[in-house]
Image 1 (tube, one colour):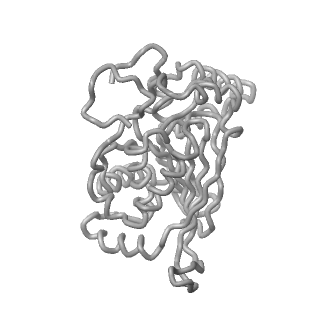
Image 2: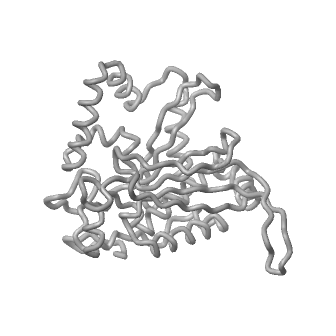
Length: 300
């Protein structure tokens, strides 16, 4: 898609949206002014059975891959949730990237780093597993460093006033759409969504705040497996194994109805994860973008 004046390296300026969405970033200027909190649960028995069934066909498949693949699918077919606000302007992100923190060893002093794999909108579960595992394996070794680690180490050893100056300068560049492409590429804060697996630490999910630095509009936290009593259609209480999910989103990028419909679709995918084995039937382009020429994908 051809870029126009006002577009960024990582996104297209939205021009075909309701006037309200053009105005609201001037009223709610930061992401922490604009956070909405969603809570849901996923059926752990369904997901565990699915992972066991396909582990042989998809080597390295783990539970969290299913959630990453489900997010990728949402960004591909519900593109408004892949928008972001920066400099009081709203953009449609031109790619799908999900950031995650990983511990190089599960100890109090274990090193932590971030990875940010990119995915094609047509990605299947196997594609997601291969891409994520490749990045995890590259960054899991103790002592290894990626570009994010190198930048943090370089800046972190500078005097405080220089750190503040560098960060403020980068935020200013981001606001005017001139953040260097190289910085956007390694920054974990410039992504479609951030995923944290609290269950791997043995605790319940949490509401994780959005960052004012960067462009992340969605933060999903997975919790540990636990039991919950749920009502059946016959009015009986059933004890079920569930995973608690908590999502924090930026309300400035789309309306509540769109978010609610997207969350229902997310739950539906997790109830039937087999849909992730195949590519989506259609990849949908954000309807806020004015296309310069016809594309071979559906415009929402």
